[in-house]
Length: 247
Ligand code: ADP
Ligand code: MG
Ligand code: MG
Image 1: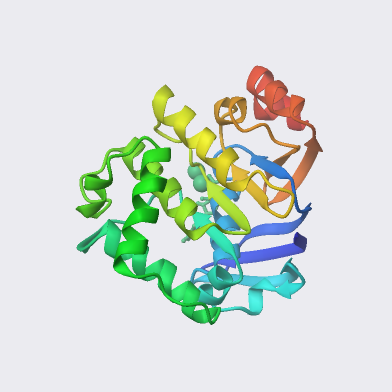
Image 2: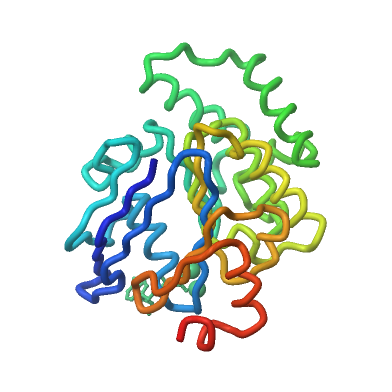
């Protein structure tokens, strides 16, 4: 489903990814772990098409399409969902407006009918309830004044509404208390655990993986994957630290 091969990327002329090779088949959840500065967020940004992140070699294919050649909105339309370590705040627009426009622009690009206001509100309320979030909160401007946990729950509401084929989630667990962590983990399982979907979960710590058990765990270090294993690798990293485990 996601097929990354020998991917090299540079930021401001500085090489950060140095040959990442990773294959995530449909139906699987893979975790990428690694020390600070190893290139985890850079990988997420490169796959999202963020300006300034230059692919210098290798490829990333998604469902047989050359991801790198697609514009960011085309990547979303192809069914890729990206959750970032630092969610953006958008003061002038309510979360509901933002979600509705995101969904409808995706539906337009697939030649699907837009949802009416009433249909959309029903969907948003259902998804918010599943995340234990008050839908009233989504009337507020996007992420402005949201706590870390509220931002991540709202992001999971967004993911439930968009219903993507593949989710790439960068440090979705950072700053969450235990209730929010459980809610986010359950959201990922509910929305994304399906035979035709895939997840790449980027995380510095093991604790989210207590709730979303990965099929494979990869260690990123110095911009390449230095080790891969099953879920037990995450526990080993937690116990022994990255320096020991990656040696
Ligand atoms: P991680 O998410 O694993 O902590 P990052 O991908 O954020 O790592 O960063 C990897 C490396 O790339 C770090 O050394 C960081 O300083 C560098 N880097 C990231 N973004 C930039 C940038 N815009 N300009 C220069 N260096 C950057
Ligand atoms: Mg970091
Ligand atoms: Mg990061």
